[in-house]
Length: 302
Image (cartoon, rainbow, N blue to C red):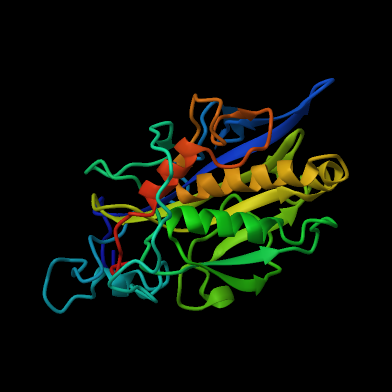
């Protein structure tokens, strides 16, 4: 076969996701996180979509694909799959995470590197995001912006609002969309949508969120983009109720927690617990986990 051969020396990318549903009792409202793993149309009890977007390609951005001088590097061979590396990447983190006032170990991470560090976004480049707000309900104008500000303070990650988009949510969203967003990783997509547009929101599910991580072979993984989908009709209904904005904010913060790399926990005090009875925002465990994610390594090679 002509051309370079790509074996198991891989830069790979895969996405972790979670979903939420809202359940109302006679006296209280509770938000329940529903774990789902999608494979061949079957839903299993796992909090992640695993293995999506995995590909086999070269070993690193400057390594000849064949190992022979004069052959194209992996980055050159991957030009249609990945953007040029290091865009906007600086030598130091762009911000400093706010140190939590109270220490807590009540947090977990969605993915870990072999050295024991959690997979997160590079703190040395901004995380761009776009919002599809065509279906955003009345009263939701600042919910996303305020939640992102909270996550930015907790992680030190600098978010950049790239404005509106018409991109529709997709469970197989490509992390690199050159025609739509240029020679960079696609921005984080936040979409107000419906179960008709996003079938994963069917039934009581109110939101989904996750990120794509990328690595060269067995090297360290980093998140490069993600997406967050919100059920606009359900949230519109909630916003008409007392404390509706607080519950909607809790959903967005929880999903952004997953986007950044947090997993569910067993501690009912934390926002990353699968069920909340009161929308009190990020607790000590959530904040300590986000603080650690803000110390992820810089990635000029991605």
